[in-house]
Length: 523
Image 1: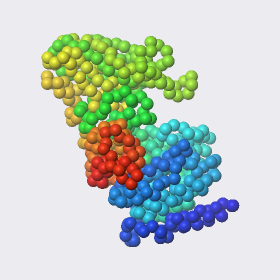
Image 2: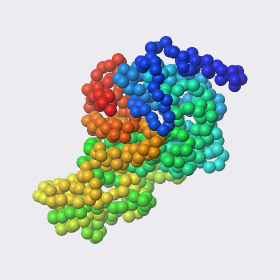
Image 3: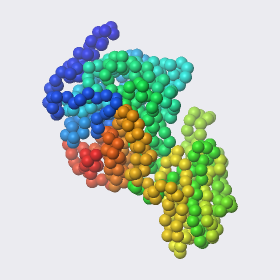
Image 4: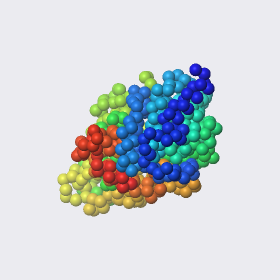
């Protein structure tokens, strides 16, 4: 079959599925009069879920019509489909109809129920957030970069042709999931041809670009993309200690204590060395340490090596090199290698205390990494308490955020720890300041913004996850942003999430987290 015949055949399939504007057999759940046109300048406040049934080749399943039924029944109107291009691309420029027809069907189910469908290349030629999946590099120079961008453009040109004529009220394209940290100019240069290809085939198609990765697990908007006529998306997973607590892919996180929300204090459990110069500031605690005390710093994770130094009023009271490799004393619990064989780096989980004596009368305690990469700690314990007659005093970091520099805290005679600037706890208003406000200002420049992913892993205590979710929804509403929970079914979702601290409701063959559903419906 030649290319023209294949294109004609595909369009016939789309018409048969109801994707060319024809009425579907299923009765639409919305009025016949369609909503106002959608443009990249301003997005509706769509609310819904990710459906990651085709997120990668080894997890490639047909979408389920029952998901769309439930989403519509509960009053939501958005699904994002994270896709792996390899599912329908056995080799470059050859596309398999089997998987594409299943995507066609999902788009048709959405149209029939008034649910907007957003197609995202979660794994694209030359890039995946989980690491390289082919020999190409979407952001690179030279032949590998050129070929990745050619294939990337070809993917989106094919999809634009396939779904031409479906209004942007019903369907959008999300270019690529979670691009890495890079300049806006590089991002624009790499995705610009694909955007041009989409709009050449379908001038009115809504295209959404994820922001780039920033520090502390936050995404940043990209002003350089504004001339390309695309909306933008953020993913709200901040702070990571709450959202990714003991997540299966966070292999080094299984030893940490459970998070709270709001976090009891904004102290960060990361210490950065000279290798991360932009964040290389020590933790400083100022106050009256009245009694001599043994301080234990509970070291958790060490990257490469770190020179940990503790000072009391400028005098060194602890000095230790901590290593992460396959040699040395091996006083860690386990060491893990990253990168190619014979190169790369190590992370070591120590999960053990190191002890220093804090002299009576100390006014300032300084804890820092003078040289090296980075490390984390889970607690500072003082025996006896340096501020009163108690047997022990403990400080637990409220945050565990990579890329957040340390700060100065005051410790008052009652044992209250407060930062010298900012609120004494870390909660809802901090979400606005650290994650949402930069995007709200960006939206003020008349660029549509949507939260493409957010949620808490099922190891996060349920009450903590509910409180965090509710606060995020309040801030999304404040900014006028729609959102999509990372997933409907599964560890971040409201169905079959396998949380151990939830009383589930049996619901149409699923285990429903009713409390989480009601929080989402209120948002």
